[in-house]
Amino acid sequence: MRWSVTGETAVRRAAARVAVTALGFTLLMGVAPAALAVPPPPPNPSDADINAGRAAVNGRAGEVGALTNQLAQAEARLTELQADVEVKMEEANKALVDLQTAQDAAAQAERDAEAARAQSEAAGRAITEAQARVDRFIAGSYRQGSTIGSMSAYIGADSPKDLLARAQLLDSVSGTQINALEGMRRAQAEKANADAAARRSLQIAQQRQAEAVAAKSTADTAQAEAVSAQQNQAGTAARLEAEKTTVERRLFEAQNHVRGLEGQRTRYEQWKAQKAAEEEEAARRAAAQAQASGGDSAPSRPSGRPANRPSAPAGASVEAVIARAMSQLGVVYAWGGGNQSGPTRGIRDGGVADAHGDYRKIGFDCSGLMIYAFAGVKGLPHYSGYQYNAGRKVPLSQMRRGDMLFWGRGGRIHHVALYLGNGQMVEAPHSGSRVKVSPVRYGGIMPYATRLIG
Image 1 (cartoon, rainbow, N blue to C red):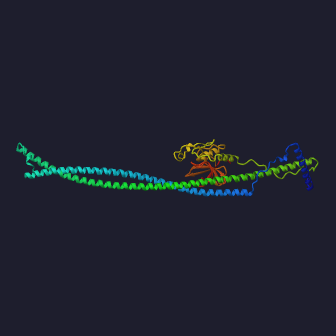
Image 2 (cartoon, rainbow, N blue to C red):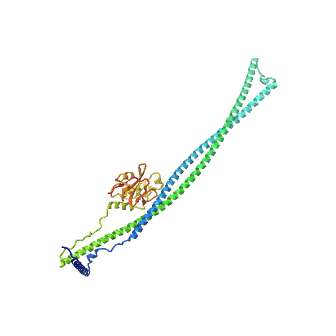
């Protein structure tokens, strides 16, 4: 049966009378009417507020991106300076070795020269004594008019044969003395030459030592300059990191603000839909009551609008994973730390982690944070390389909230983070830092994300 305009108006008036009567009755009885079941409306932010919040997020993201680029450049320069420092330190070590070698050579040359001088002086004394003996022998022979020797040498001879033997002995002795004199003179010349050579060696060794000292001074100066430059650059990197962290925090706050406004708008729309549905249901019941009271017997028109009640949020497991990871913001980084129950004490690595005292801290490393985040979904090994292969690979162009992102070099994975959407991720970055939200870094990122849910 068709509804006429007059009939529909009559039904609405009847429904209104019934509703007023029912309201008065329920008020008298002290019972709240069904039409008042809808709660008061939640806040409804304006489009201008939401757009302003989104603009602030975009501005903060731009600041973070710019600072990230500056920080990357500073860190690259810091790496170059670190390599320069290491080279200068090795040059200083080489200069020290050369200096020690030169000092040893100079000391040995000094000992050789001293020994040569002592030997030359001893040879000179021996030659002087031999010369004196020869001179006395020649003088005695001259006074006796014989080259054989002094006549006193022949006194006491018992026979001509003994006299001849003594003459031969004196002749041999004088010849031996002359030969010894010539040998000593040759030895003196050789020792003098050796002494001169030793002195030259000493001069060369001393020159090398002076050169080594100068080289070490130059290397020390270069090393000090490199260290100073590295420290200055490290200060710049630290300042940029602090600024970046501040802007990232402001970005996170702006994102939360926008999400809060959008959430308020969503809840308001849901409230409107619920209120409209309940009002329509009340009108339908009023019309039915009016019909039962003798009004138009036509059936009420079915509502053309759905109840539009909010459904259960999609991706509840993904949100649970993200909520677990985000609950650890600010927890310190500890290499080797973290399990399914939460942060744990770090372990020694013999290097960077030890320098930051990670083994004394309770916290997470990058893969430990993923273990904790996905504890209710899947048990993960404490190694980012294995985590990369723990789920389904999806291209980065298709990555979505809840996927794991990885970074590597030379085919080896060295970092993992959890993607939050909108170009953001939560991570435990490195020793000396804390769990935080960061913009996705695309330098060195692996071409695929790993998806464990969906």
